[in-house]
Length: 90
Image 1 (tube, rainbow, N blue to C red):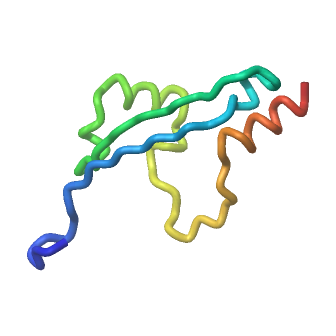
Image 2: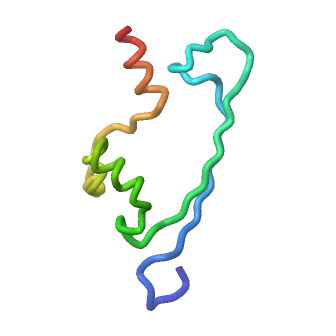
Image 3: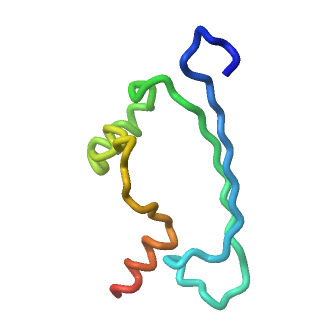
């Protein structure tokens, strides 16, 4: 940030990942990779989300209506760690 009169910045992000098959795909031993590509931007408020996304959050993921506390000490959960637990119970 180069403007002292502002306390936030407009942010655009991009993310790419090349990975082996994810555990939940049950493709172990087969040749191939998965390519992920996504982009996003910072919104000024929750209210700027599309109504369809807000409805999905409110209906199925209400804990995401508020951000986690800044001192949140939970371990990071990845697709690998989550599905290892799920598939390990099958």
